[in-house]
Length: 136
View 1 (cartoon, rainbow, N blue to C red):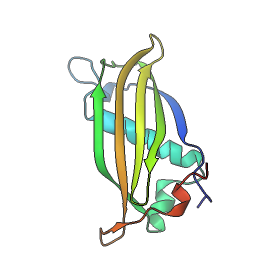
View 2 (view 1 turned 90 degrees about the vertical axis):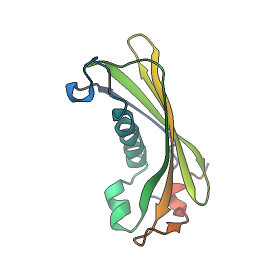
View 3 (view 1 turned 60 degrees about the vertical axis):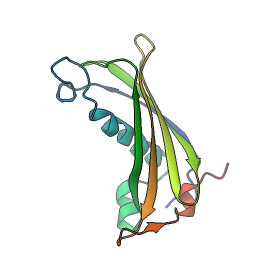
View 4 (view 1 turned 60 degrees about the horizontal axis):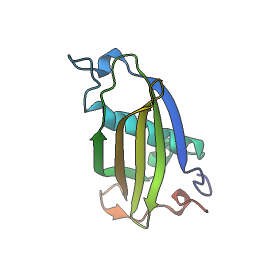
């Protein structure tokens, strides 16, 4: 595990796939949770860790809250920029903020927030591991 997770923002560019859109050629609302998970996963990875290693060591981070605000539709083959930022973190909760934009026109597609908590194998709440806290 890293000593700490000091990188608090990650940006990634990807394209909307055909399987992610509905009959109106708009990204289906259920897909945004997947996009946000991609951002969280990569933010953890650039800090020197990954979910598999966490879970193998008994650290299970589970979703306690998910918020999405839809601003404009994204369509098949749109190139999107997802910015994932570490929000507040305390002894029991880890919060991330998301902004999804379309660089071609600068349009904000969606914003969101998630809250994760740490549970053990008995599904009991646990304090977050110290390495998840940035030093800065």
